[in-house]
Length: 89
Image 1 (cartoon, rainbow, N blue to C red):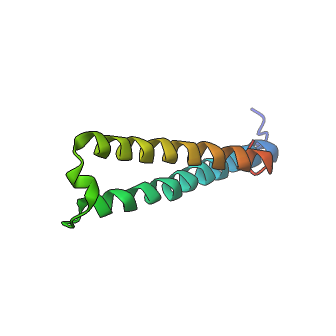
Image 2: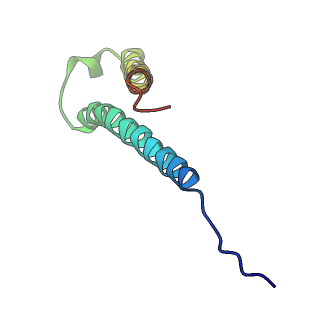
């Protein structure tokens, strides 16, 4: 029985590491973008008097929908910018 040493491809390990780093960049970007919407939700969760509460639920839903849409837009924009700068594949 011959004992041949096992070789690992350094490029394969490097590719896996690059993919893990790219996933980290995407998750960090998502966390940063979503935290902005969390601040808006936190303000709405406080017991303060603002005119938006007096206008009814449709205005509230427009505000929440706009926040969600803005969050998604910012995330897509950030990922596209990272791909443009070749930070992501």
